[in-house]
Image (cartoon, rainbow, N blue to C red; front, side, top):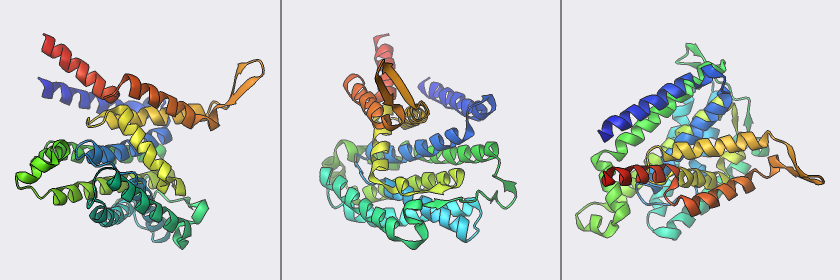
Length: 325
């Protein structure tokens, strides 16, 4: 029964996603949301199901965006090949960072990922092909498989949606596979998993590389869809944003990061467009500059009132209600 409900929920969400640009929703916003939703899901695979907190995941998101943008703009690769090139680059980077970081646990692991991510950031500032503070602009969308022109926003949206669905399906299958069960056992009790004969470091490294690769797919897709790769993509603040999305939606839930990404992106888009708001006679606030403050306030409220995140609390309520019956 629960499986049928879950399947029905995913079908309904897919239908909504397919119909969204046809009912007046802005395709650019939707594409940005889907890219960050995949980014958050990839991050959740690491922290929510493996128990590894990375403060440097923007390094994989941003580096893939730069690599993809450069390959599409300078080498003329088709969008699917450019995205694969960016994802491959983030996979290699994830292998290097993961091999160094998994030697430590807890806050030490998190700080190592942050330090290495900052190194990537400064490389992007200095590297000649990144455009420094200007970033890579006017990245061409090209033609999918050399046939389907992606210049149209609606066509591009459905391509981004297809990438997201494939990435989400891969994460879902990973979580519910024997490999995913081992990851959960490592998250819950690493010494016991080690005593059962599992090579814990190998599993953690594989999870880290998979998470980094999917984050790279999200970043590369974003650079193609929006035509831009900038230092913001690789900055540590982006790593903080994806942590916020995951915690807000529900840590360790499958759909939670998607909900969190939708809330954060909607707030940023709506508040940034509000401009100045007059609260009292002589008291005016520029909402476009106060977006982090508002989002931070909402996050504090969520942490205090919804410790499991929005989706986590809803799931817990439904589970408790079902047990009562």
